[in-house]
Image (cartoon, rainbow, N blue to C red; front, side, top):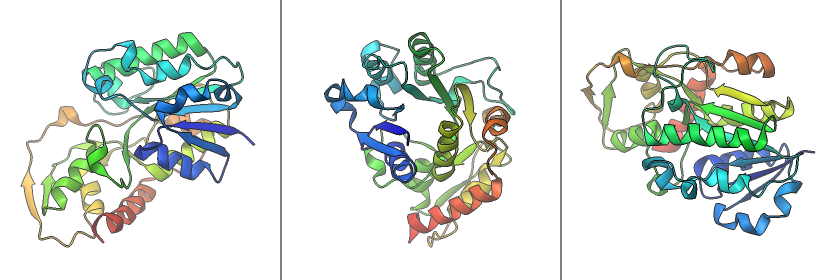
Length: 268
C-alpha cells in the first residue's frame, strides 16, 4: 500500500486530503513547522503533498525563505519519492477552455510565485513531480477566520450569513468540490501520473447557479445586489488531459449535489 505524507495539519485542504486518503492509503499528516523532525522519515514515503503556505508567499514578491515547497523539497533525497505540487489556475490568463500548454499570464505575486516554485521543483525532481493547477475548491471550512486568504466560498458565506448575495449576470468560473478533488487525486496517484495537469470540473459554472446551490438552506431574508458585469474575469480550465488518463465521473450534477450538501452544513 502506498505511503502518503500530507504537510499542513491545520489547513482545510490538508485535513480533507488526509481524512479521505486515510481510508485508501497509509496516510500521515504533520505540521509544516515539524518537517525538520522528518528529515529521515520523509524519504520513506511514496508521495509527499504540501498544503501549507506562508502568508508572505501569497502577498509578496518571491523569496526562497517564503517558499514552503522548496524547503520541503530539500529534505527529499530518495529517487522513489514523488512530490505533488499544488499550483493554481491563476498562473493562466482568464479565458474559456484553458489548456496546460496555453500561454502563462500570472498577474499577482501569488501566481508569479507559484510559477517560480514550479520551475524550481522541476529542476529538483524532474520526472518525479506531479503539478496540479487547481481551480476554485468548494468545501466546508471549520474556521474561516484562520485562513490566510479568502476564496470564493469565504466571500459567499461572509455575505450570505448577513442575507446578501450577488447577481453575477452571465459570469462563469471553474470549480471543484473538495470531495471530487480528493477522488481525482487518489486516481492520479493510482495511475502514477507525472507532469502538469489542470484539476477542475472542466466546464463553465455560472456564478449565479453555484450561489443558488450554496444558498439553498439559508433561512435569512435575501437582498440581491447586482455587480458590474465583467466578462474578462470569466474562465474555465480544459481538464481533458487529466480525464483521459484517469477516466472517472466528474459532472456538473455532482458539483451541484456537493454544493447543496455544503449548504446544509453552512446554514443548519
